[in-house]
Image 1: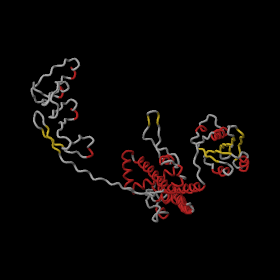
Image 2: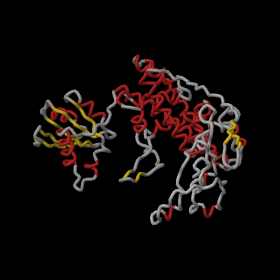
Image 3: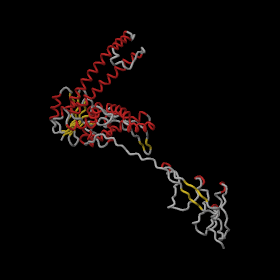
Image 4: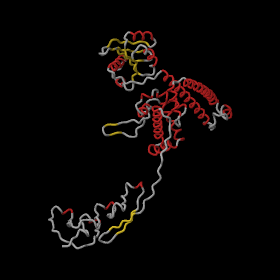
Length: 461
């Protein structure tokens, strides 16, 4: 098996041939117009694999060599940075590097569309070109009339047109320009209508799988004839994508990532790689979608509050593309899924808890808080769980506050000295203390005060 690398240009090609041991067998530069010489040269080294960069003018070369080669590989020029960043860059070296990568099976491949997909792309992209020219001409006419304060919204309707231009006091130069622009606008309209008929005739000859894909996409809201054709033509064979993330990255709608060590930049812009026509069609469909669908409008409103208007609509367009890809891959039409909303829960009943303390019984009333505040609120107790509860002081004073005694505590305990003097102090004998009522010390002296004994901790000697 031989391996051939081709450095393709508009006027000539430079070829390098190697064997499996990366030994150079031949080099040659051939004029692109000498197609017979190109075929004769490649026929000498059969069987072979050939690689060429996916530049703007590769299709003719692929069609010429494909019947002779075992495999024609398209290399992704963006990922072959070793060629573009080389200090020594010549056509001979570029062809040699391509051949060496081919022998090592290290070529970053680009997708090669089928002949039908190439025709579809040509028609759809030319329609977009005509549409952009129509918009440009209309804007130019509006601009000229606005200089005379004579612009109007229905300029291109039956009430406007050349009959209205006669009423406006235009200069000779502006009147001449507007006439030519009006003729150009009408020509572009005629060409667009003819091209639309050509696309519909092309669709009528589509295979069954393509017809099913087109019918699936048309079920999605905000997706019409133009968006459907753009998605099918630009994505090509959607089966080659692993998941929806790779589809978004292919369309250039995924945000860029920059990470070094533990630092990772956030809120970066989208890469804008791939087809600009595909991104444009998805964004336009996203605008129609947020105006017609309450579900998508709610999503857009949430994103708009956090990210702004432009980033929100791009995020909606990316989500729409992922949905369309999932529809095609699972062969499922678009469905609106409604989620049931639960009614707010009624507040609970009040719970009365009676606490006993040396100063006398204390009655407190606790009210259940709403569900949304449960995480930050204290847990409420029920009569089946506990019968007594400690009095709760404010959160800021819990650490220094003294716990309130209850009737279920132990019967004996030692007197506690201040915490700062425990290590150097001598243990005192147990002395029975008379029942006393707990007094609350000021906040500034609570840390050094000893905990007073409880009613059930005291024993008589």
